[in-house]
Image 1: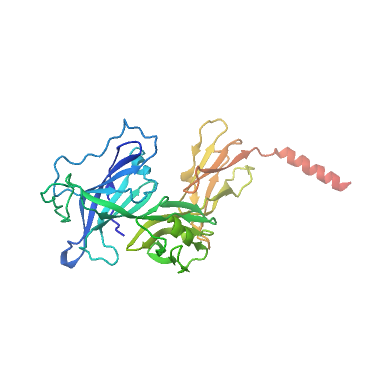
Image 2 (image 1 turned 180 degrees about the horizontal axis):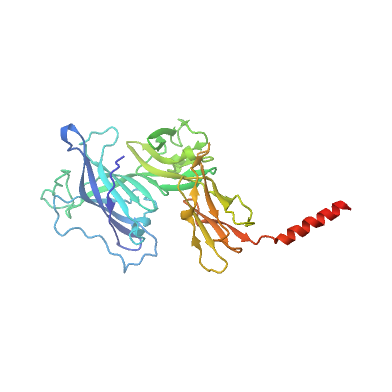
Length: 427
């Protein structure tokens, strides 16, 4: 899986209400060119044109126009024109709306060699990776070149200078999408203890009910990695059965859905902090094998509370306030202290006067932390409200806990009460 990311610029245009063209600015990535025998990746600007993607009927024809190829075809241009009618591209409309939603699209193209074929065999194959950043579908497409059989000219076709493959009469490399691996949710955040579903699926051209499909899920995190699930299953009309190896308790995939619907999703029971990481869904079918990445982030909001039940200054001695944040994940947490005198409408920050304990990590991987603040009666009269405010990734809004300075009981009241008790004892 290539790791170089190139920000793509999206232009979405359409022929009609039934189908639209999506044009992506990509990079064509090749390996080689390193010094001293080393290997480097080289990038060449390329264009990916997805033709006639099915769209909803609410598209406005006044705001979209069809893709127009260059007026003069050039041998150096890398324009991959993709026919997608053979294979369904899930959530294709999200590509059309990504630019309007200010979402960046990452697009990469490279050569691909199907299993059992030679690198220079024809038809040629390429793999395209499309990711919508900030949420959206992730796609990996295997493209297969097709000949322009409708060309009637006796003139030899223009050859693409880098690929040495014939171009169409309008200067594009005609291809067909023959295999697609996708995730509708390539990024997922979930709390500890719940069950999660990591979405992955595939579509393939010209499949048969007897085909065998391989599915592997791998986990990677901070330099560590291992296989989570490995499945080999035969078609629904064969008696080959299914072989499954599971190396994490509570994970499963449905072999029937894998064959029948192309559903390769992974179910994980009772998430733990140690489940966080990058999951690689690899699907093998026939001559093709590609993958899709799903990021899983574990979250747990902190439980926030104060040790003190109330604040009463009996003398001029300072009092210590303790705010505790318990069992949260991930590590980063922000604690603020605020005070609001009874005569003021705005709060005053006391955070710089507070101190923090060190982070404490529990056996389940969560963290705890405490913050301490010393307050003096001369600065905080009765009626003053103290607030400990905690911000954390797992909290949609900060969590506040408050205390109000109470008026101490008069000394005479205390003496009177003690005298009353003594009188009762004398009786």
